[in-house]
Image 1: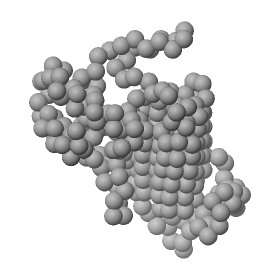
Image 2: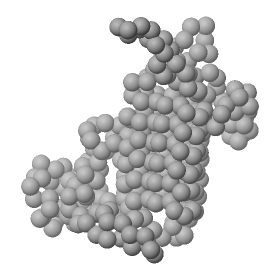
Image 3: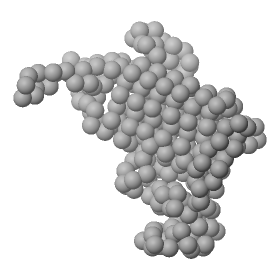
Image 4: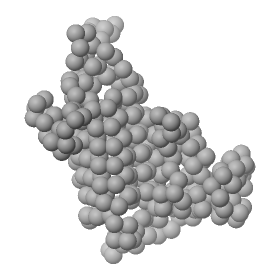
Length: 274
């Protein structure tokens, strides 16, 4: 069935929740959509004419998948799981290096050249070519990660299924994310940005560009080539003034030089912990 037809069928079935678990035709359509996500033919978000577009109907299909699937026992040697979503496999054929015991759920797409250290990738996620997902990093449902990204150890990348119109976390190409960073609530990290260790960014986190005479405040987006560290700023409360977390843009990664050289240069220049 063509993608446009699948979209129409998913949108039509979405308002008939009482029959999701019993209608075999709906189950078949949902499984077709999940299979297309699995093989990378479709994805939750696409970059189109300079901005990211959210495909709400695909998120609908993922939500429906949880209803049409049955609970099953999954055995991996002596390990046992009990869940509705199968575990991704055939990594050799896909050209993906997977170190025990990394786990990715079926219905996520992992491109050739990706390395998964012991980590977790949820359904609906997309990971681009030659990206590293380091130890104990988690990639949430529908998160979108570009090519050549380094996701360091312990990083938490949030997922989102509902509300349908909500953006997933999107990380563009050649971004470096330092250890223990947390990125949630649909934040956008634009290409070639560098985030130092422990940067936390939510949709409401204040991001200050302090490279000018006066700070420039933004939210929800880290501009391309930015070098970011965690910081704090004073905020007045009824009981007094306290410092609350923020993120600070302290410089720019060089666009004109080799990616690896510019990354190393940014890390050295700004003495970043990663």
